[in-house]
Image (cartoon, rainbow, N blue to C red):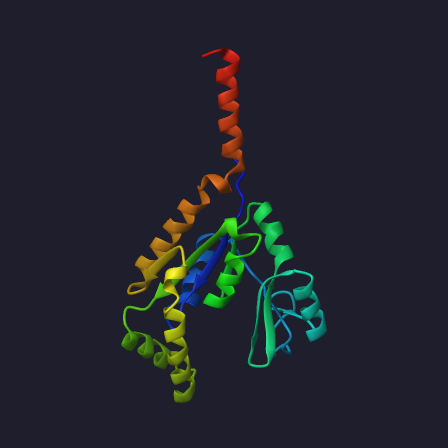
Length: 213
């Protein structure tokens, strides 16, 4: 029986394991598509247009926003970022799930959009603030100043945990992965996501009525 796709939002403060779990989720089910954002920033070496980002001009980006073609958008460090609605709508109607790695502000915009009925939102919490800092420092990618800025932003992110459908404490990566898979599997079976089931139920009712049972 056919089903509609889910719009899966995965959010967390930096260092809580969001990117790793998003990658594992797609390894588990390669049919899950990753939403490719549009941005006005210049492509970095090695980035491919249409794969890493849709690189567009500021005028083109603002036009998309005005026309209602963005599910969510934001202005970050001098550049615009957003999620085009068209590809997501097409994927959902084709029965494909689309994964979003966005912050709480983007999540709120999508939860208020025309595709809200297909949204599955999940927030990841770290086991402790000290562990969150340890994970950021262990990456060896950021300066102390950047880590401190990420930690300050984490407070704002964590304060919005209760705006999500599900909240997972990522104290064990493998266990959290299993829970994430369980959630996605269950949400795919929501009645609203299964038009085939609704049609089947109506067919059964018609059979009863026609047979006089």
